[in-house]
Length: 168
Image (cartoon, rainbow, N blue to C red; front, side, top):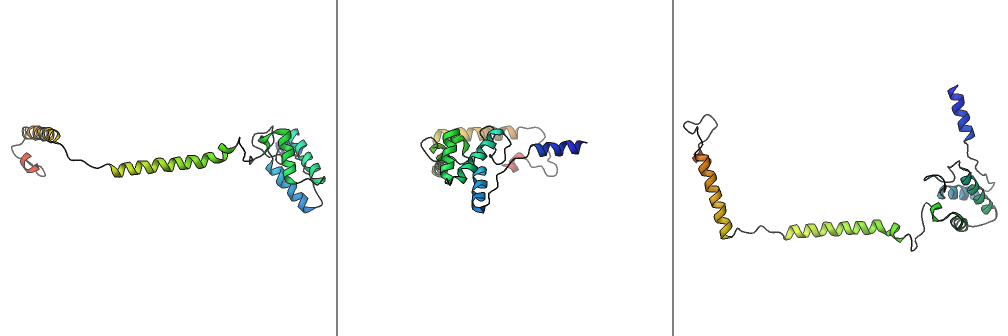
């Protein structure tokens, strides 16, 4: 019962596709219906959509092909009627330059940042301590050594243990 219901649903959702006697026109039709986006569906080509608007768009494509229109004429017609959204690959113009150029600009900015970081690290050198820093370090080390020497249990070191004097 479930399988019958499922197959009936698929039969009702079948998408009518126009068939042309000319294989060149058929190929152009298939290409255009795959390249035009359904304005109602989310990210679905009109050739794959079963929405009524996609059916109308497929019919328009077929009619325009039969009238001898070029692919760019058909795309221009669809853009004029539905807007740039119907093109999966938007045209390069003043409104879409960021869409096309943005990834390249981001890659170049990333390379610039990496280059600047690498150069900065190469230029960073270990500098010698000045006299005040050297005196402070010596005082800290002396205090640390003294605290190690004063720890209880230095009478007889066990196996693997060293006295404070052997450690320094």
